[in-house]
Amino acid sequence: MNFLAAGIIMLGAALGAGFGMCYATSKAVDAVARQPEAASKIQTILLLGCALAESTAIYAFVVALILSTAG
Amino acid sequence: MSKTAIIELCISAVVFSACLVGYIAAKKGIGEVEPSKKQKRKKTLFFSGVLISAWFFVGVLITEFSGKEMHLAIHFDMFSERVDVFGISIASTTLIALGVSAVLIVLLVLFRIFVLPKFDADNPKGIQNVLELCVEAVENFTANAVGKKAGASLSPYMFSLAMFMIGCASTEMLGLRAPTSDLTCTFAMGLITFALLNIYGIRKHGFAGRLKSMGGAVPAMRPVMIPLKAVSDIAVPVSLACRLFGNMMGGMLVMELLKGVLGGFASGLPAIAGLYFNLFHPLIQIYIFITLSLTFIDEAME
Image 1: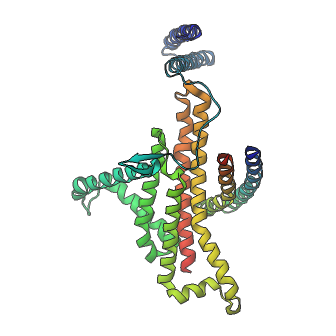
Image 2 (image 1 turned 60 degrees about the vertical axis):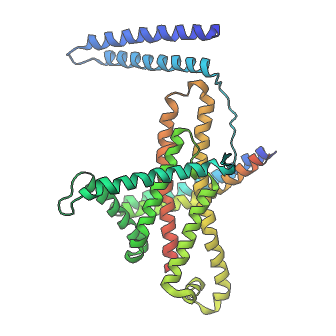
Image 3 (image 1 turned 45 degrees about the vertical axis):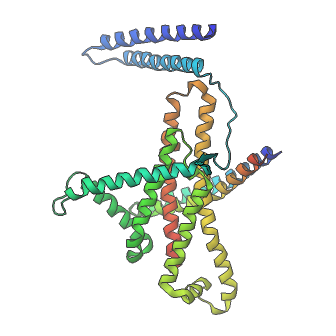
């Protein structure tokens, strides 16, 4: 049962984080296409945003790990 | 040795020698003239045949002698196994982290004694240029994030943190468990960031000023805002620790799964995947950890 719960957790987390990161990246590509000279600044902000968006998935991953090792 | 293993070994050896002969013949046949597309394709085909049969031969040999079989189940634990050192039970990752810092310190001391006195401030050359480039890049990075004054005192810590984390990540290539894939190590790093952001905030504004800046611009809202901000500040070390731990643990699990699935045939292929999971991924996580730490410190100083 724990493994099923971990799987469902990872499904939701990966979906959410994936959409979030995809949205952020598409906006960043737009911004770089409009202003190529600001590319390095945008890259820093994008990395930060992606890390924050990814962190929800990572929290879910940690919870899934705890669940699947709790036995 | 089982019968099937001997048959497999013979087949792969025959294929290997056939492909090698074919490859040498193809290379000689091309000679000086411009090779046609067909000849090039032949060469590539024979070369991949050589590689694959050699990989298969080695894989069968390793499987025979080590008894490692392909398996999908891996054994892992949230916390690392404990070892006894002179009667005291210590987590193995703690020992590895101590080893990494010992290696770093010894290298630095040797560097200080033997290399640093030879440096010339007026006409730098060789390794001095590389070092100056690194130090300047880190100083610029921190100064951009938290301002010049705080950046000057924070850049040495951030640089040594990055060095420590790179050392930790590279222990994974030796087959040890990286200290950064243990929650205690990453939580300690998060706590250091938490202490730093409070120290820098209080040093800039004073204790009352720090509370005031936590409350925001509207005085009437402060009783509500200060607890909220305090909770989000307390979440900083937890989020930093869980992010780093989850990422490193995820990378380690993927590599373990790959090794488990390949079994005795895990020669060569995990090294290619390791370029991403043991090298590039930790570097990105280190960058993110440092950037986020600096952002939080900057936020506390506003």
